[in-house]
Amino acid sequence: MSADLDQHRQAYAYCAYCPKVCRFACPVSEVTRNETTSTWGKMTEAFLVTQAKRNLDESGAAALYACTGCMRCRTFCLHQNEVGFALASARSLAVDAGLAPEGALSTIRTFRQHGNPFGGDLAALASRYRADSPVRYQLFPGCTALARAPELVEDALAVCDALSAPAGVCRASARCCGYPLYAAGDIDGFVEHARRIAEALKPYPELMVLDPGCAYTFRVVYPRHGIELSTEVKTIYEVLATHLEHAPQLARLPLEAAYHDACKLGRGLGQYDQPRRLLAAAVGEFREAFESEAEAGCSGGGGLLPRTMPEASAEIARAVGQRLAPGGQTIVTACPTSRRTFERAGRRSKDLLSVLRRWLRPRKAS
Ligand code: SF4
Ligand code: SF4
Image 1 (cartoon, rainbow, N blue to C red):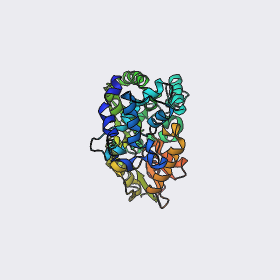
Image 2: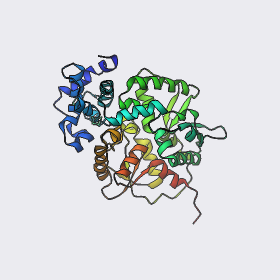
Image 3: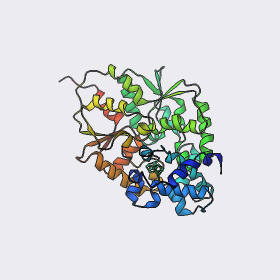
Image 4: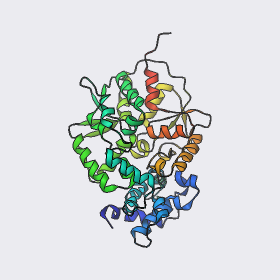
């Protein structure tokens, strides 16, 4: 067993011998109604394969990918098992055996060719938002925002300006943080890529990161793979929350909002309060889901699930969207992937930064 897999030996065994304590918590098994995709089922597959008690086949490999890495099972686990982390390592067995789902293999191919999961040239996109003069904060938007939601980058920069936190997109943004390789199970490729990113980030003492998935990757996934950044990584939400005192006195937006805790921002980085303070400033009261913070529902957008199990991903977004906003409220989230996932599932959803920009937009005096 490789050292990367061996570190999860105990986690695999704990789950395999567990009486399925967190059975109700997993968004994937909730929609597939399938024991194979339960936390117990996926981790048992990893346990049996790594113990050489079973050969990995296509259906076993598919089970390893039936996880968004949302960490919701951890909330209810006495062992605090990091199932997403353990399954990401186990996916390397599926990649090596050529048994990984096509959505994962095509992600790896695209990443190897372009250095990001979307294809195309991120450097050209990032250069559009570079500041002309020195700025206080270097922004790392992440490739989902750059490639799929450039208006979100504009919103972020405008909000930073309005809250006296001038920012510009940093040069290092031309590269992806590497999370898609990690989630696809190309762990060696991820580590190699992450080392190059760590070098590219050396000139930056501090980085403000828009996408919680990238911030989580830098702050949690890199150190787990032996890569320590010399850069202090902050999310844009923790920075903006400290600048709220600079907000002009403005009327709140008439928006019926429901707040969604993004997994990597909430359970991943423990940031529950900062985005709520920002949203409350913009809209006043908003709906809290019955399950929130550490128990919050996952949108189904993580762990490459939209590429490996697109129907399950959409079904998760529909189910969680209904629980979050049963009265048709607008789901506000700090995760660009979650926003896209909710929208694809037919829910009205806005990114927190877009809501803030609308609130802070100069308005005519009434
Ligand atoms: S994550 Fe914890 S509670 Fe869930 S199956 Fe594994 S050991 Fe049991
Ligand atoms: S991390 Fe999330 S998706 Fe993965 S097994 Fe746990 S609850 Fe399910």
